[in-house]
Amino acid sequence: MPPKVMQTTIQCSQCRQPVRATVQSLVDAAQDPQAKVTLLAGRLNMTQCPNCGTPNSILTPLLYHDGGKELLISYVPMELGLSKDAQEKAIGDLMRELTSNLPQGTFKAYMLQPRQALTMQGLVEQVLQSDGVTPEMLEAQRARVRLVEMMINASPETLPELVKQHDAEIDSSFLNTMTMIIQQFAGEGRVQVAERVAEIQNRVVELSTFGKELLEQSRMQETVVAEVAEAINALGHGANRTDFRNLAIKFASDDQRLQALVGLVRPAFDYTFFQEFTTFIAQSPAAERDALTALREKLTQLTAMVDQQAQMELQEAVSLLRELMSSPNPDEFIQENLPLFDTTFMQVLSLNVQEAQKRGDLAASARLKEIYNRVISALQTNMPPELRFINDLLGAPSDAEANALLDQHAQTFGPSLLAAFDAVEGQLAGQASPALIERFDMVRQRAAQLISN
Image (cartoon, rainbow, N blue to C red; front, side, top):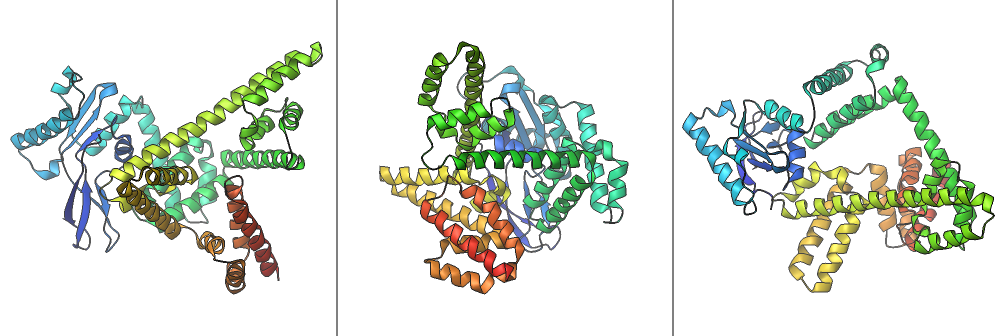
């Protein structure tokens, strides 16, 4: 089981008000991988003051363990001013906690002498190096961070020239670094700063050579998916496996369209589909069989890829739910991991609620429902106003009340509301009930009429 965490009260470094904080002194990468992510992101033992918003770091002895790499690192902040004996006692206590959770017979020699880190940065670097991140890679990352800081501090007028000067350095790694910094600011509660950096990132994408290529690729992918979706819709509601086989044959020489086809209608490519396809190949002219066999193999690979991705997302959602259930501060955990609470997570959570109810486990059912309400509340609070309004429209007791809300507020939002409708439409496809989709189409059409007037 993941190591226990401790609740404590600290004094805010800025406003001096008392702040409740969560402290974790033992990180086991195998048992608690999320703690490792939090450590590497610089958010471990960090808490934001609810009074003034200042992020506060809690100094505590720390023991990091990764059994798969036989890595054990101790860190005692010098600021604590502990004597050598006190340091050894603190690490010894953490060692006892670590070994008490290990399966019998798994204690190894490397645990007798932990490596030492003099600073938190030194600890992070040792962990990264064990993951194959070289000093050269770390220096390259520091250079990316410095460039991000330069862009954050640049004025809107000087940013284009700065991007031009560093155009060759702007690649996927650089944009990923910007995204990590945005997530870090958001996790610290500095939402306005995170939004500003996100705006700068969008501008960098628009100005840089690499960013322009990304935008073009994205537009091409959207066009491909739209064309394939249109071809699927043209088949009508009575489409069968033969129709989808013919569509796959049509796209056989276009990997992008073939991948989009499988992604959009994965359930159509089931066991029976491939059985029928094999029969079809056997009955086809000899000159066509090799190409059809290659297409069948490609479809098999694509369906396996889609299934593997779905399985990974499902496992991640299950793991996230377990961590949330065991968290001593679920609201803080939800805020720190808000982007991870997607449709897959909500489906897993809903299924767990149903399963607890079937078992008659009232305690588990009540706990899961409480978690569900907390997540929904956090998502709605952090949702853009347009999406919150659409959520209100879809949740209105009747069509008449939904229309009344539109009449009162649609023109206040303007065209941005229609853009939000477009974003939601893709998420509802294939996941929502017919009644909800019908309500969505109705309010979308009425909103367009009101805004255009």
